[in-house]
Length: 114
Length: 114
Image 1 (cartoon, rainbow over the protein chains, first blue to last red):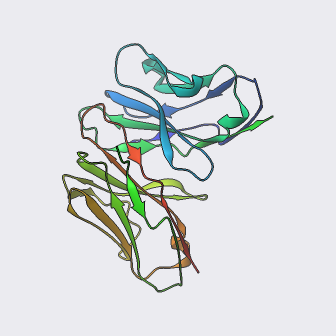
Image 2 (cartoon, helix red, strand yellow):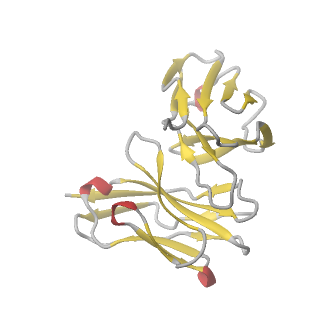
């Protein structure tokens, strides 16, 4: 069975601190990888995605993620967080060539203290 | 271009009543997903359709829940009878089924069953 693990359930950082949120998945084949963000009271929006090529993916608002195939990981990073980054972050995986199934992690709640 | 449109945005009802949530996917998308989000269980996939056909409904909690997609531009999620534990935010999402297509989410329908 597929699974997506997000190890950090709740992260609290001060502004300007660096961020890294972990994401691991269990599927051994070719995957497509996503990070979504959900700001308070809003719907999920795409931050970034990986399909192929450069394993370091840059997204919106200064976020980036690195796909490490050998570790089945797709960690999200940001060098300097802002108060406006306070949100819930979801990692998601879909299997390439059977792309309809999306598996979401349980989410990581990020609180940035001004 | 309009995004995924859901209605109603908020619904408050009494236990035992029928609830119908509606979704209009992005034009041209051929896959539609219904998710439920709660604090306790996070984001759960209820059902998804491909070309208007239900593909996987294993996430539907029980027979009180049903979903239909009569055409490519409309889907409903019905709960009959509703119970307080059904209180959640219900998200609809759509995508174009390619290897690289991400999910686009609607604003969600917040359901409160008293």
